[in-house]
Length: 204
Picture 1 (cartoon, rainbow, N blue to C red):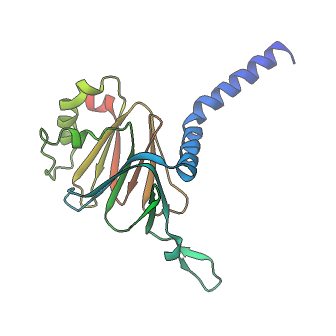
Picture 2: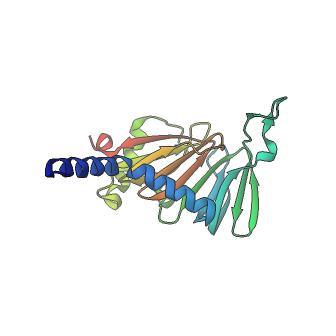
């Protein structure tokens, strides 16, 4: 193998690694959740963004409860179940309907942290609200590059996360759910709206 070919191979592999590392990280995080579970906290919310319940655990895994799948006359799944089958250690939680967020340990919900300082009951969905909120906490998150604003199904802000590297994916077999990888940590959003902003946009 000549030198030019070696350099080309190294550059190609490096490019593949750089462009695919989030995908690789997402794959390993999903595998970890399925086989070992993730340490973190589950919260469910009502339509006014008030917490209904909060469960923390060292081994949490979320799947669709396929007992509620709808099948056609051939036995093929025509509509996947929206019922969540959640394991917390050796216990089980069944959930459907209301907004749910799972945040792996290491992620901070800044909306919860600053709830005494920020009017989170506002129904203002515009960017000025996001800017005002961001300006209050950006000293705590110097260097962060993405802001994730999670809203209830009626548009009320209920959670905010920051990350230098953020990617999204759709989990297999779990409708109405989005998986995010935020700086290597798993964030799961079920039945909620969200927007991801470049923090450069908010600084401008």
